Length: 228
Image (cartoon, rainbow, N blue to C red):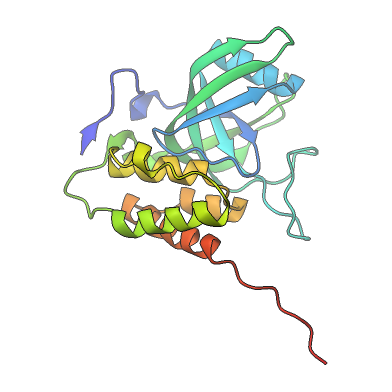
């Protein structure tokens, strides 16, 4: 494995505490790029504070409630234990008071504990990056490769099912990690499915799970009809 680029933080640079942005259905993976439109006052405060510090934000998903529905964090619901820290790598202001940012994934983390609400009204956590420290390294070319043929077929079926234009020609020249990351972050999968992809132990496991999820999405189960 090799170390990432010159602007990427090392393990010792990762913060002990960080603000978190709970957003259902949003998946950030290491070295992936997530554009965000920030308009809520508490998250405007969060971005302003992060820009003045280390530019790091943790992306996490709210857990489903007892009715198996998901929240967009109206009342600070519980979140999944594992998230991914991202660094603000692009930033602009709009005339109507919004921030347009891009987060670049750095490293996954496990939440040790949630901290008191910050003065700006946003949440923060104490995080543990140690279990995921290999996220800071580029995958070795010697690792088990992703099954590209199967992934391509699953993606083509997914696009056909959802009446979307295929993007395989654009993605096919990328390496395995960027291929899997772009598809996983961009496809319309459920929050639980995206959380499962986030927590995969290896790139091969993520590619295999992603392929399976796309195959399932391309062949949805027919609704059951009641019988007398």
